[in-house]
Length: 218
Image 1 (spheres, rainbow, N blue to C red):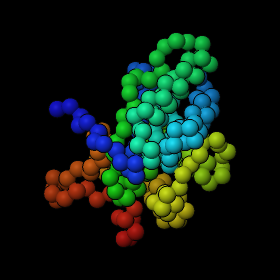
Image 2: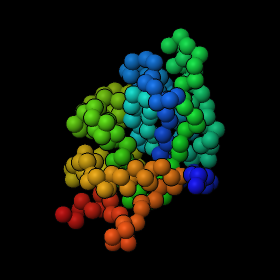
Image 3: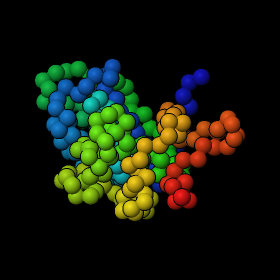
């Protein structure tokens, strides 16, 4: 069975977007240079195309973005964004190869609980990859831009959910704590669909309970 098509994305909807390089190869330039390229084009994505950027993490061969498109132009904006990023990478690397392995992959985030999980998933990518021990140690993440650890041209929008996650002490601990393996697998599975939906636990026949609300009960 193929992946479901993404339904129409309302201007107020949040979307998690993954972009991957061809065949999973590493970017052809140092990651700090790739970050600078993304900075410039994320700036244009916000101010030229009207997108709202809530979080971005750059990895060695892919990137994660949480965004919203108030002007209802996600397809148009992301096509321009990927095209321009690819062209600049190729120009600086002196090559003509295609940079991305295909179209970006968007996942619609339906509610605030799922948005919590999406932020955690985005920020924890480098930790899960074994690059660092804490999400607060990774250089190529807008998380540390928000806290003033690094300067960046990426214009970050802070909504009510991200504001609480970033500036509440307990929520920051939850963001940084790796979930149990069964929860991590459930989230991975959910992000492979066009609409983020947590699976049903076969034992309890209930939706897997993941999110900041679970931590607050302790």
